[in-house]
Length: 377
Image (cartoon, rainbow, N blue to C red; front, top):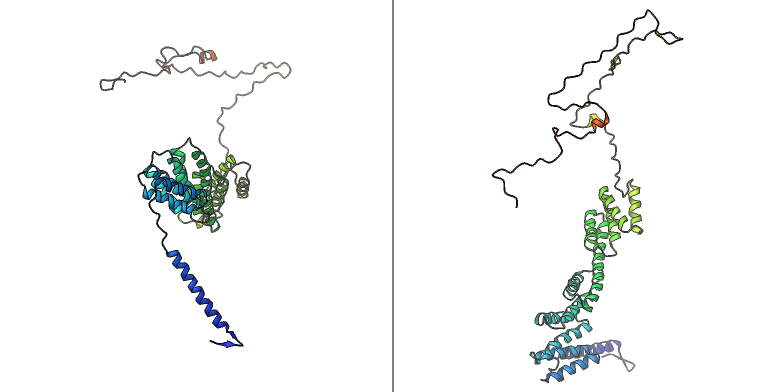
């Protein structure tokens, strides 16, 4: 040991301090490793009241142990059933969810008809609900909270637990939708459009009442436009405009379609004109040459007009000595078809007259059933 001017060196001091720290740490470990003293046999009323007093005094963990002791020492007493529920509640207060959830599930399994079963279902849902992580983390507890809250709403619809569970269930769904949106944005930033569309579709299909639906529809429009699937992009924008006409997400989607020459009403863009020489296309025959136009005009389909008759330019009467052209003889009428009805005139009244009894009518013809036809039921 080096001593300078009556003082011990720094190396000696540091070594001595390390030894003391090691001894102190060993003492702490030994104290932590020492088993807790066992609670002696106590009457059930006294043990339950002690646990209740500890809970009211803020000694929550001690109260949980005492409630567990009530069940252990007196498993068939009426206090043991309530002690199971109180023990789970004490664990919930100190965020010991891994201890509270098994205790609640054991209570539900052993006492399904108890009047406190509704509270047990609700408290189990709260244990999962309190463990919900940020959207960037795993959402396993969020899905478990959704199932547990749904059980409360379905099993106990007319209780205060159901009303509170309904509110929390909306928040849970919004959280799950936020997780899908976070993953969808991740794929969209990396231009993995199909994977992004699948995530956004989950939000639109399964979480329609959440606040993430407008953004999901707009992101779907972006993805479809990037893929060139303009019909689906128009459909997504139309749904967005119908349900959220005044939102900023609809304005962004509409501007994106307009920039591509489209509109949400379903008008598709004109197909692009391919400037390709037909001779360069493999497997196609050249178009035949067009025939030249005829050199002469085709003959008129109308009959020639008759020669003009000379008339006096003053009186307008036919001049004497000139021959009058023969009158056009009308063709004889065709012979009527036997059995066909004939019209006496061609007036509008005759043409619109009702059909005679000999003519077929528009009434349905009833065909009699044969011997093999089934009888009407």
